[in-house]
Every structure is written in C-alpha cells, then in structure tokens.
Length: 560
Image 1: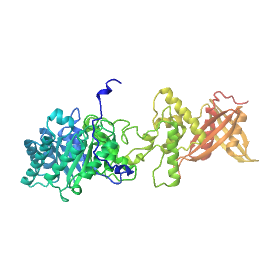
Image 2 (image 1 turned 180 degrees about the vertical axis):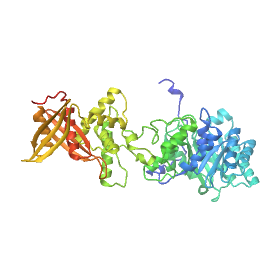
Image 3 (image 1 turned 45 degrees about the vertical axis):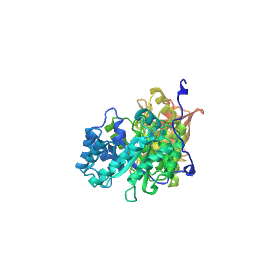
Image 4 (image 1 turned 90 degrees about the vertical axis):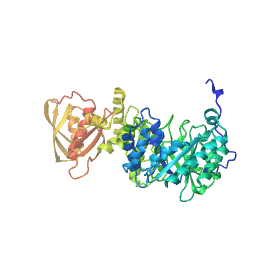
C-alpha cells in the first residue's frame, strides 16, 4: 500500500515499566461506570438528541441500566446543553444515589456558566480538561509544556474558588486530553500539578481520567502507561484513576480491560460504543465480558433487546448485527455442525443439572440478556443441519424426531431454503413438517381399524384409496404390523417396517400422541412419516400411512 512511509508510532512508552498488570488473568470486580452517552455520544450524532430525548435517555440509563454516574454534557457549550442540565435538576429527575458530571474548559466565563448550570444539584462532578499531546501543543495551541501546565493549574484553581465561594460539595475530575499522544513524564507532571491544587482527601476524592482520545498503540502499551501513572500519581489513595478509551484501532474494549488490570478503577464509555469517529468503548461489551467470567458487572443488561430499541430510537443509530452480545445475529448459528453442538450442549445441561454455563459456541446464556433460543440461536437456512432443525422442533413444538428422521427432515428443509434462497422461520419449519410428514393422507387413508386377538393380532382395516372405500384384513405380531400387512397384501405394496417411536406431544392427561415410522421400500429406499392423534394407536397408523404416501405410492390399485 502506498504512503506508509509517512506514518510512525505516535505514542510514548513510559520511561520505566514493570508489567505487573500482565501477571493478572482477569478482572475480579466491576469498575465505577460513568455513561458518557449524553455528552460524547450525543455530540457524535448527525442530528443530536432533543431535550426530551435526552431526558428520556437519562432516565433509562439510571433507572433501567443502573448507572450511578452520568456525564450529561458541556453546559456552557450551547443553550440546549444548559437547559438539559437545568431540567434534570429543576424537575428532580436525578436520583439521590446518582451523580451527574459536566465538562468544562479552563476559561473563566465557561467555568462560571458551568457552576450556574449545576446550581441545586445534589451530587455532581465538574470535569476539567485541556489537551497535552505533542501534536496539540505544537500545532493547535503553539504553547510550551509550562504554558500547558499553567492552563490546567489555572482551571483547577478556578474550580476550587467557585466551589468554595458557592459552598458546593461537588467533586472534581481532570483529564489530560490526548493522553496517549503525550510524553508520560509530562502527563504525570501536569496531573500532579492539578492534584496539588485540589489536595484530594479520603472524603473528597479526585478523579484523574486518562483518555485514549485517539488510539495510537496496542492495548499492552496503554496498560503500561496506566500502570506507570498509577504508581506515581500523588495522593494515590485519594484519587480514582479513570479510563476513557476511543476505538480508532478497534481496541477500546481491550484497552479498558488491560487498563483495569493495570490499576484503573473507573470507566467512561457509552452503550454500544457510540461516540466520535469510531466511537467510545462499548460498556455493554465490557460489562458482559466480565459477566461471562462470573463477575457481577453491577449494571443491568437483562433485557438487551429493549435497551437496543430505546437507544436506536433516541440516537437514530443502528446497532450492528454482529455487535458483541447486542447484535441481532451474535447468538445465531446457521452452520449445521454449530447447531448440532449447541443442541447437544443444551441437552447435556438438562440431563446433568449444570450450575455452570458451558454450552459450545455460546459464551453466555442468551436468555440472561433477554434473547430466545428458538428465534435468536438456532436459525434455519440452506447451511443448517439436522441437529439444529431437530432442536427447534423439539423446543418450540414438542416433536422429538428419531435421529435418522431428523436427518431426512433436515435435507427437506435445507432444500426448500436453498430453492427459495432465504432463511426459514420456526413457524415455516413447523409448517413444512406438518405439511410433508404429519398425517399425510393422500392418496391412501386408513379410516378405521378394528383388532382381534386371534393367532397373534388380526386387523380389519377400512381404507380409502383415491375415492374408493375398501376393507382389508391382515395379521401380524403386533397391531401396527397387522395393519402394515393388510395394506401390503391388498394394495400390492412392497415395504417393511424399520423404525417405530412414539411419545406424548404435550403434558397432561388430555395430551395428543405423536408417532414416527420409517419403512424400507424395495430394500433400498427409506421413507419417514409422522402421525398425531389423541389415541396412540391411531397416531401410529397415521405415521405408517404417511410414510407409505411419502414413499411415492401415488396410484395404488386395490386387488380385486
């Protein structure tokens, strides 16, 4: 590819690394979560949310998902942002255990308006930021390191003065924006300079937010940067190290996970990763990754379809079909081998009463996030296999097809899907089974059967062949064998019974029975049929007749 020479690594490794974080296997507890959907997420939309949409989304984030910290915007940036902040406070929409967070630059009139917007708020974080990267210092601000530190310190002093003057109990947050493009020793110097102004205590901790404003490196580099900062920040016991990863390199989730291993305690992100450019870290994915390893994420994603619906409504964005955990197809198995493994895994769980989730191909139980096995997991198309199709029929409609019949029906379904070039819904699969396998009474139909115990079983079989009603007799070792012999001997049919299985189709005393029969025709062709009836013997005869008719005996002629 041309022009690769004009690019180079834009990150800065710490002057010292310990890599202790790499010795840890997994995250052991949920971080503090801060939703920035209403600020970072909203400012990235083509059409930003209206006031009422933002109010609806805020209520949903705190009451349904369970966020305790929400960055609601930049009140000094626009009238809408200011009015939103005031509406939340004046309408008393912020629960007592929820903290709202607002963003501000280090400029007197902006800080003044920010505090005015927060008047009356019970719990708030004022988030101060200024950019510190080499590119921003040289190209945008054209300022020295000392001048950049002066901007941060001046802003920190103004926040402290306004807070003391108004007697507000608000907490403070500082972000060296573009942290990942900043020399680590300078990032540490500016953060410590701000901390020396605020002097955090155990009762009033300060948040130091170390953002991946633009992603420049692999995740392990970011983790090393975070560990370096965590080891050297002043007042470490009284500060909360926060992460705010963007997704330019597709690494936001990995950056977050490794950053938490490296000592961070807090995550700022959005639902489904909405945000500037390629987005912020997806808190849904991050939280459910923890959930999948037995860690309570302390957020509620038990109804992801409802969360997705509300998100798409207020943002106008679309959750991608393959978005981890959330997308429409993330649990879907079309492949025959995958479906078979899932079906066997589910059956194994039922048989072993498992406490742990270990089903192949499914990292979590879809039902834990509001998804359904029949519509979200086993999906039927021309690539599907007998296991998935059989599982769907059993779980949704109660049919437990014999293994060889599942294979036969699987080929039928796959052929129809291939011919129609489309996915088949569970109801369509059920319709195919009923139409082509169950109680298939053309051209032969057994209308009535009477049995007599006489040297085995003697059967009198009233049969409709085409438009004619005939009465045939036959004997056999059992009832179904006697009916089969009556039909063979009187209709000149050449078949033998191979398989017979039956079970109740529903639970309860009035449940219907279903029977499955396979016959061998001429010794080289197998035909399957199913029968459903309130009476098990009638269901068995129906299954036999269905198998005969499906074998292609289209124009039988009764013997005279």
